[in-house]
Image (cartoon, rainbow, N blue to C red):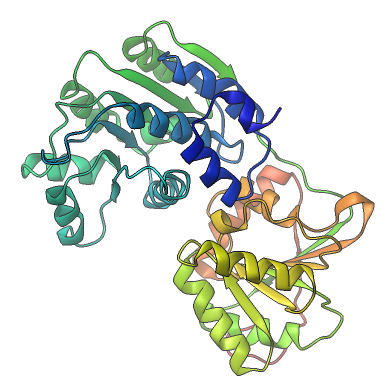
Length: 382
């Protein structure tokens, strides 16, 4: 099946094509039509199955149907609750990518940072609010956020929110929402308390259950370096000086990080280009074409910008930053070792990322070999 068969409107289809999307994942194929019909949805799915697009695409399409008086202040029409800052930011990036031609505004709010930029965005008016429960309640209490006009509610990784102790916060938020709304709930597991919540807030939902991507190809040689964060750039440069690295797709967690890595590589006279959401589509396509044609040996990318990248005979994938979502690791390294060919996946792990590494190894059910013989670098090797 192609995305064209899901009755997605032209502006979103244009954005999906720009991101390199062609075929929907199983959860997208089943969820998008159901949500577009106005049904509540219960999805048992982990991150890595494509669930963010499964709710973001139809949510944007539904909101785009409504005529908005541009002279009137924007009101929040959709609320997406996420358990962590990382997931909230990832969702925000997806909304930006899929909705780039729609004129629908969104913002992301989360704790642990100053609220000033977030409150300015709220005052300017948004259509979609992506939030973690604690910061949302803070801003509601201060009068910056009103939920009276919510038409769509998404609870993403709801079981994780319960595990993190947000049950009371979620109840307080749900109590402030209109009774008449469409609700989408996604959870990786269905413990009794999760089933009770779903039963209380969903009305005759469509139920979808999909398995996560959890295996890596045997043709991929996987290894990890333990290195201080400050030593990562030096380690990457030393590895790339080895000409046996024919081509390398390097993943960073942020757009700013990708640009920093490219500057460090260019200073070391290693030709590299970055591809991320702040680059124009033309610049991203040029960088990708140069990489495919081997005019550029190294492409540095963020996860959302790397969607759709399919490079033949890619020799190396390097995780400069380990992903906080283990399924993302599987997707990243799956870009090498294709069609029975060999490939190498190298990961850099600093002290703060050791939890991510444990989660990845648990998901793929194997230990990743540690490379202990490292170049003489600051902070490298233990």
